[in-house]
Structure formats: structure tokens, C-alpha cells
Length: 432
Image 1: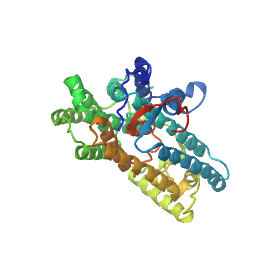
Image 2 (image 1 turned 90 degrees about the vertical axis):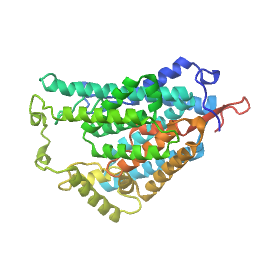
Image 3 (image 1 turned 120 degrees about the horizontal axis):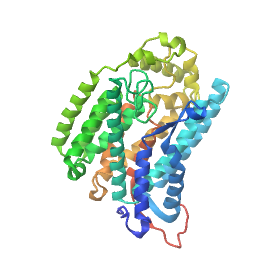
Image 4 (image 1 turned 180 degrees about the vertical axis):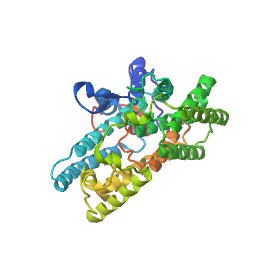
């Protein structure tokens, strides 16, 4: 197996540049910008703004400058993304027939899947620059998560004295749920889960750098993971810890983990009993008659499950097309949310069983490769961490749709990268 390149070697180009790129990408994955100042009621991920640069750089580096090797093989990766593109195109056509028009949801999902391919390549590029650059990306990702989590805790405490409650920062307007720099508490919880997973996996390196900062950072992540209130993320954290400790060859330090768990739980408990200075119902935005329907997340998922199974029975082969589930859900009562909280069910309902087979086969191939890589001493802890994190995401996907989280695809691309060989003049820029 080829060793990952040293970022200081001539093959990797400018060492400072690739380090800056790793840090920029790690921080960009945490933030979304509101477009309301220009009259658009949507947010755009900061990572999407820098993705064109990373995608172009990745394509040039991977396919023209050097032959980057990935554990699943480029044929597998390319066939997967081509198959997904075909499935998305068919899904748009089927969805247009089912709903009467191409839905905006279908267009967004198609564009999002194209972006995920770009993030996969960006992950391959970062890892191909060397283990040090890959680790710098991990450390920067964790540092950003800790800083944002700490700022969210401070913002929450400020609400107790009436500072900033009219326009809460890092919190939702409803019940002050933590959202960080994302636009929703649920994706933020998955992001914090990812940072928690990395810090657990890299305990030895973090503790060697600064024991106090290591414990403080992990405590803050644990506290915010508890406070964000996403039960799926709690399940994912438990799955990660269980799988990681079974799969890893060199176990992390247990002492700092236990200390951080206690401190984080106490911090979450203390903040949970702090009452904001104003009543949270004053922040509720009127959304029409659906406000009158009070339900639990379990009720939501049960309703969605019954509707999904009904649509699968009616359209078992091609599904209802992209946006078809949302369209059907919107005309039924009572369906409090209009996206399906289950990745596998969403794939089958809107794209048919072929989509389920394609995605499951791809991730099984990835996880099989990562399991094999764990035995290689020169691959470090990263593949094992991503293997365990994918297991936790698989558990989460049963109760939520997690396929379009950009950092997931960066992690996968970086994890399956095993090295490169320098292109010879004879090889040129042919296919890898």
C-alpha cells in the first residue's frame, strides 16, 4: 500500500497552501449564511461557496497531476456517482408526472447530490496531501466545533439577563435550541457528533498537545450534544463509542474521556435549568392552522412511516419521483413536517428500490474497505474513526435523512484515500 504523501514534499506542491486549504475547508463546513438581506428566505452553506475552488483543485490534482489511489477503486466511485445521476434524472421525470411539475425540492436534491460528489473529491484531495494535512483538517474541524459550541453556551447564558434575546445568535427563536452557525438544530447535532467522534478517536494526540484543552473541549462538545436535544444524535454517539472501542487497535485514553463526560453532563445539567429572561412562546412565528396540531417526534415518524409504506405499495418500482413524497404529505392531514425522516425509506419512496441498492452497496463497499484498512499501521486512526462514525450515521438514518450532509462526504473521500503514485510523462492525463 502506498504511503500518503508528506505535505512538505515536491509532489504536494506548496506546504503552507495545502495547510491553509485544510483549515479553510474544516471551518467552512460549520457555517451557513442567511440570504435574507438580499430578499431570499434561504441559507447558503459557506462550504458551498468555497467548493468550486476545492472541486477544481481536486479534479486537477487527482486526475491530471498525480494518480491518487482510493481503497474502493475509482471505477466503483465513478460508477456510483454516474448511477446516482441517472437515478436523479429519472426521479425528476417521475416526480413531474406524479405532481404535475418538476418540484423545487427535486431540483435542490439533484443539485445537492452533485455537490456531494464535489465534497467527496475535496476529501480525497485533502487526504492525498498527507497524513499531517489530514490530521490538521481533523483538529481544525474539532476546534471550530468547540469554539461554536462555547459561543452558543455563552449566547444562551446572555438570554438569562435579557441580552440579545430579540435577535438570538447561535440559537433558534423557538425555545432557544442550539443551532450553532447552521440553520437547524438537527444538522448541528450531527456536526457536533462528528467533532465528538474525532476528539474521542484522537484522544492521545489531543492529550499530548494540551491535556487541559483536551478535557475542556470534549466537555463542551458533550454538553452541547446533550443540550441540542436531538435524540438521534445521542443514539449515534453511543453507537460510535461502542463500535470504535471494538474496532480500534490502540485504545484511546479512558481517564480524560470519563472526566470530560462528568464535566459535560454537569455543564448541560446546569444550563438546562437556567430560564431565559423572556417567555419562549413570544418568539413563535404563526405558521397557520398547523400550529394548532401539537405532536411529538415519535408521532411524526409514525405518520411518515405509514404514508411512506403506502406510497411504496402503490409505486413499488420507480417510486413517486423527487418531491413526490413532500407533495403527497402536504395535501394530507395531519402531516406536521414535509420531509421523510428516514434515508432508506426516502430513497425507496422517491427513487425506487434501485436507489436503495446503489447507495447501500456503495457504503457497504466503503465500510468494507475501511475495516480492511484498520489493520494497516501506516493508515493511522482516521479510517477506524470514519468506520465507527458511518455506523453511527447508519443508525441515525433510520430516524432521519442524513445523506446530504456535506461533511459526511468529505470524511468518506478522505478516509478511503490510501496514497498516490506520481504520473509519468508517458501516462499523461488519461483516466486513472
